[in-house]
Amino acid sequence: MKRLLAPRLLGTHALAILGIALCLLLSSWQWHRAHTARPAAASNGIAKFEDLSPLRAYLPESAIGIQTRVSGRWQEPRPGNPARIILRDRPADGSLLVSPVAGDYDAPLGSWIVDLLVLDDGSTLGVVRGWSLHPSTVPVARGRVTISGVMQPSEDSGLRKLPAISLLTTSIITQHAHSAVHDGYLVAKSSVGHAQSLGGTSGVTQPHASILLTVSPIIKGTVHQSLHWRNVVYTANWILFAFIVLYMWIRIVRDDLGRDEKVDELEPDSSTRKKAQPAQSKTD
Amino acid sequence: MENSQLQRAWTIYRNLALLVGVALAVLTFIALPYEYLLGHGKTALTTAAWTAHGWIFPIYLLATLNLAGKLKWPVGKTLVIMLAGTVPLMSFVAERRVSKEVATTQS
Image (cartoon, rainbow over the protein chains, first blue to last red):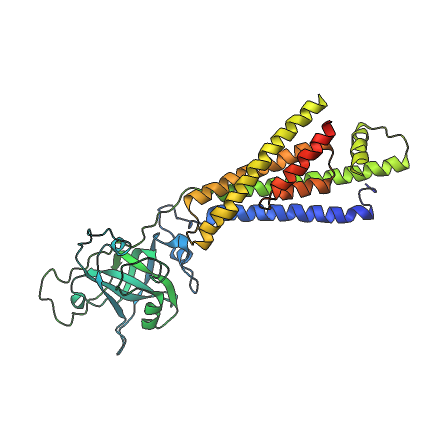
């Protein structure tokens, strides 16, 4: 024990303990990474909105296309700020906006209607309420509401989209909002609430014209239930590295003690020392 | 007997050193530029390649450790040979030096 704590071994001990701690730390980091690339889905497959879209942060890639639910109050229109964004010349199926098959693009074009939802914490979220041929006939949304939908990234985030289409971006939403805005937007699938309708400006002339079709999101995400095997392997690697450091540590200490005994007593007696001896003579 | 054990440890080490060397070279000079310079990001193929390397590399370490025990290498030298497997193309250099050493030990 006294020999183990000899001053010249203290540096080795410190380095070894540091090395092992570092390896285990990196191992746990990889284990963490093996999991966090997908959001923690609740048992019913619906993730908590706060987990998907942290405020004042970019929408994480793993949040895209995951179903969620938000509650809030529709932003009231103000003079000069209609609180509504209308994106023209878009198909109802968002996925057609990204690299459509040539010649196969004959979906009817209408408008996406984006209203702003002020969430209970005061932040603002852009919500694609739906697709319509005649957006002016779609009533402005008002009142409290709880909406189910999926998150989509801001459309300036690197998607290769059809040319000459106005993009639905976080900055556009920010221009219309009165409070801090969530990155990306929500595509509503259903909503329950007490939305009162405010008649459209031109009145309803065609009975089916004001129908608001649910928009199919551009990026359809899936909740990955599998682990990221690359990170799982790296987790195991780091544990192995920790063991290698431990092994080296033991060897250094054993060799060192063996050398001590060679000097102290001329006759080594235990078998471990006999084993350590030839190793020493060769390494020195 | 001793000699054949050393022979076997050397063969295992040599094959793994070459495998790790080729794998790391491919990953460094093809997969990494493909992912980050050409901007394709992580693809299924490159991720599979990195994962495969993640399996091979620890086996290389164990093989090195095994050979180091047979050749009674000091700790420092063992670590250097192991770390050579993390530097692209360096494992080839290390393998040549080790093989030279083994050849002189045996003669």
